[in-house]
Amino acid sequence: MTTEVSRLGSEIAAGSSKDLLRAEGVTKTFPARDLRALDPIDLRIRSGEFVTMIGPSGCGKSTLLKIMAGLLPATDGRVVLDGRPVVGPRTDVGIMFQQATLLPWRTALENVMLPIEIRHGARAAKSMRQDAVEVLNSVGLDEFEKVYPHELSGGMAQRVAICRMLVTQPSVLLLDEPFGALDELTRDHMNEELQRICEARNATAFMVTHSIPEAVFLADRVVVMSARPGCISDEIEVKLARPRTLDMTTREEFGKIVRKVRSKLDLGGQR
Image (cartoon, rainbow, N blue to C red):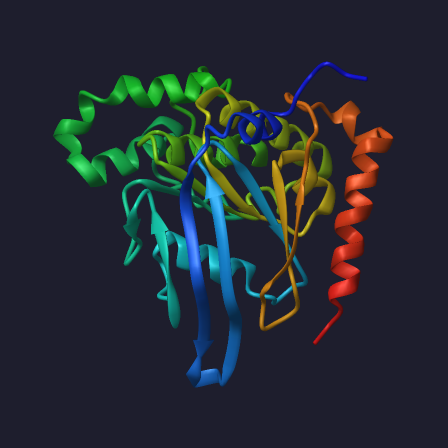
């Protein structure tokens, strides 16, 4: 029996973690389309926890993430981050979507510095340049500071996007299919990279994905959504030791969790 203990298991045993992000009775209806996207959602994410969400296409996963980010208002309920209700975009939230959306006329370093410039102004940002350089160095892009987006591979562009998200040191990372457009090998590498970054920073993260293995590989807890109108149908703890490696994905213990998550999705059905 392995002597390693997962980070989640340690936190639960010690009772040391606290809720950093909460969705309380969150619903969403789009009256113009007569569409109810979300039934009441109650979700708690502890400080330092990595939670993934998976569910059928169109079940409201991305809608929930945008509400949590303050990009979309809830119809009912509320989202609370670090003790304060989320009523709009906040500087302590880092967001990343499927496409890197780098500005093509700015170098990698300039793209990473963009949120600093927006927040503090171009003049003040110059004094914070080293912060952006160090973040790029941390993901192995120290030789690509002056490279433009069209000269980067898909994986490199996503690493720049991760750095742009991290440079302001947000309280929580919200990720919407960040590697969905990448090929499988690059996606696997980026999952390892994201895990390493989050572990190094003890980051709190919430990620939407359509990949069950990806959800299990990254998560301390996998949240399963039902078909629209989306609601949480189940939650599965992932008590696998960290750091996790790609070799782990071939083991029976990993496959058992993947099968469990898949069975919960199947049981949800379409409604």
